[in-house]
Every structure is written in structure tokens, then in C-alpha cells.
Image (tube, rainbow, N blue to C red):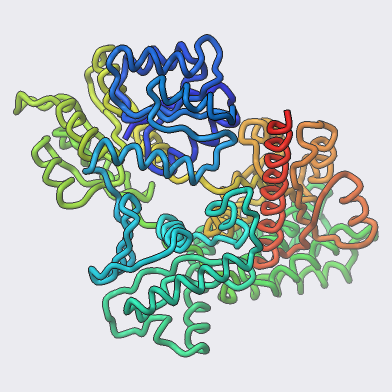
Length: 628
């Protein structure tokens, strides 16, 4: 469904827009009352979310003018004016409901859903986990079609886990999502409610507990039970067997990542072999020595995190040998040769099992391509696997309707012109805007006129692409829409010149709902920082052009970034280096080689601290507003 959000405060608007988008609504944003009024009159929205205090035209006046012109859709007012008189004025102006600012996002979303339910009884999204069904719109939970009675908090917990399967939620994160700011219960309240929820599900006949405790981190939804196979499931194994299975899964995951970067590791070891041969022959120049030092430093960090701690130790010894102040003579050449041989052996060994829970398997998104151009669709299908996409082709509109009825895709790419029928692609778009409003649709057509673009926009299309365009541009547009449907809980910007480290960190942090913003070139650091505004920054201390400590010092010189948590990677943990880290403004450090669980724990604790500080600041601001 489509919502118009009228809010002039940019931070508030972005927070609400993100929450609504996460709930799969299509949202248009207006930043003043007059623009909001014009958009509401020009386009069709299922609901208007309207601030009261707005520039150019206040929200009450917008509401009155819309109702006087016969506007029938729901209007939800947002007001910071906490008095009965203001509430009465808003409702008398035609508003259906109101919410006080600062908005509690779960409450706001619940009010939005309630207003939309009153208007349409057909829109519902049922969440499933095996035979367990949860209907958020009806606040109903059933197992084998038997109704389970849950308290509101238990229902909220279950819905949270089922909406974000495999994402780990800490107790404080659950408190932030499901409890009001004024309640401020202890974290033990989460433990109690989860225990009660498990008991109710067990009493309803569920033999498998759907909620997994990730010790030291929080809770998440287990993978749903699979049909019986020859191999036992983790719940049927003993504790020892389950641990072995997790190690095997982690090992397979590491092997996949290792193969992705095998070429770069081989190239790094080859350069060290070249340096060793030159040193043995007595002709290693300063440039080659510097290159070898840099590659040994990278290997010391990346091999450890890839499950090869022995290789990391050898690479660190090579780095120390090359950076020593003393000249490299015959004894050093012999030692270097032995170290390179040992490194070759370590890299050839299989990696040790991953000690952090492996990242959940990411399902391949299904894209329905509605187009009768066989050459075009064949080309897109051929390129799709490289983008982790599954392309289903419907050559006409009727085939598209059948495909959607069989299985709803994650996204549809729709042509507008079909020569064998008088039907227009816009007809299908109009149908789906009512029957499947949550389905994102990209229009991809040779037609290019303003009326088509306007109609697509009014019907909720996510994009309008004009043929012909490069295949890569089309696939990028598809990925952009797909990846924007589930925003991360927090953004972590990582600056490291080793692409293997960046790749592994993204894999480590993704299951915890964290988006990793990789920066391999420190020269692009500042632009990326100001464009993405991360919640936490991770810096490698030793990089070729700029050190992480220099970047840290630059950040702390700008008051805007004074509260940004900064964590640094370092291979040197002596007292002098650590003191320098904290002097330039770092909040914490992790020694290389990086240990997965330690890194995840440190990052999560820092981010939760930031969220807690923001919550306290918001509460203080609200208290000051009430006092004023």
C-alpha cells in the first residue's frame, strides 16, 4: 500500500520513512503542508501520515481542505502538542487518529495497520514457520490450525522474530522495539517473556522450540523444520553431535569464502617468494622489500580471520623480519626462506572451523520478467546467476498473472507493450497496485513519454527504465530495489586496504542486522563517511597511504563526529601504541589476527551503547518539551 508522509523535520522524516519502508509500504515524502496537499490531490494514497506543525500550510488546514473536497482515505495526525483541545481540533478537522511526537515507532506502525484494516479487509501478510502461522493484522497465532492465545508482548516477540528470521536481537534491542520509552523495564523482562512464549508454544503442541538462544548475544528464530531426510536435524542430535555439525557448517562456509579470495592469497605468497629469491641472491631493493612487508602485513590479518592462525603467525614473523632496523644478511635470508616455506604449507592446509555462528543462507530473490523479447530475456537469464538472481520469464500478461498466482516473486520487471494483445502493461500494474501492493515493480519499456511515467508513478511503480539500456544497468536497478526492502539496524563503516578482510567482516556482521560499508582506499574515506553517516567506524591502523590513527585524529577534529564510536585493528598491542590510539580518539581496539566472536561482541556492545545514549537523549528532550 502507498502512504504519503508529510513531515518537515528531516531526521524524524527519515526514521519514519525507514520504518514504513521496512514494513513494505510504498512511501512518498513531502516536507511542507502545501506540497503535501498538492500531492494528496494529484495522486492516490491509501493513508496520509501528517504532521500538525508544518511550513507554508499547517497540518490541520491540510486535513480540513482534503475533507472538504471529499477525500475519503485515512489521515493520521502527528502532533507534539499534548492537550485535549488540540486533539479535538485535529479530529474535528477530519483526522481518523493521532499519535504524539516523538513517535514510538511500533505504536505508529500499529496505528497505521489499524487504519488500513478499516479501509481494506483483503490486505494481510501471514508469517509462517513450518506449521506455525502468525497473522499480524488479525493478531492471531495458529499451530496446526489451532489458535494459540498470547499476550501482546509475547505476540510482539514472535512477530519480531518471524519478520526477521535468522537475525539476532539482543535484549536491549528487543526492549527498544517492543517496550515504550517510559516503561524502561530491566533486560530480565525480555528473558521472562521469551520463557513464557516458549511455554505457550510447547503447550500448543510444538515439539521444536522455534527460538534459539545465542549465548552472550541474544535471541533469533531457528531455521524452520525441514522434511525428514536421512541426516538428523540439529534438534535430534546430542550436544556433541550438534557442536560437530555447526563446525562442519562453519567449515563449509569458510571454504566458500576462502575460494573466493584464493587467488589474492596466492598472489601475495608469490610476491613473498619473489622477495625471498631476491634476498637469497643479494639483490632485493627497497621497493620490493616494502611491497613484501605490505603483503605480509595483509596476510597476517586475513589468514587469521579465515581460520588459518598458523599462517597468520608466520606472516607476522615475516613482517617483523622485513621491518627490522638491522640489514638483511645471509642468516636473515635463510630465516626468510624457511618462513616462506612454512607459510606455503600453512596456506595449503584446510581452514579451522568457524568459531562464530555461520551466516544464514541467503535465498536467491525471484524476479518475474514480463517481456516478449526472447533475445533480451535470454540475455538477462544468462547474466542473473552472477548477481545471485533467479529470473522467471512471462512472455505475456496472462502468463504473468498465472506466475504470480503460483508464487509471488520478490520483484517484477514489466514491459508496457505487447503486440499480440490489446492489453497494456499498465493494466496489470493497476491490478497489482490493489491486489499485491507489497510487490515492487520496475517498468522496463521502449515507450518514453511523460504520461506513461506519471501513470507508473501514480500506480506505485518503483522505477521507470527506458529501453535500450546496458544489461548491467538493469541488473543494478533490480538489486537496488531488492536491497532497499530490508534496511539494516545499524551501519558499520570499515576502512581496510585488504579486500579479503572487508569481505569476511561483511559476512561476520550481516547475521546481526549490521550493514558493512567497505572502504578499501583511505583517500575516499571522508566522502564515504559524510555520505553514509555510519553508526560505528572500524579502522585498520597500518595502511599504505594513510594510517588509521591519522584518520581517527582527523575525525575527532570535527565536532560533528565527536560521538562516533571508533574501533581500530592493530597488530601492535604494546603500551605505547595503545596509549597513542586512545590519545587520538579511538574508543577500543582489536588485535590482529582478528578473532570473530571478540570482534562481533565489541561492535555490538558499542552500537547498543550508542542506541542507549540516543534513547536517553530523546527522553531528556521529551521531558524538556513537556516542561516548556
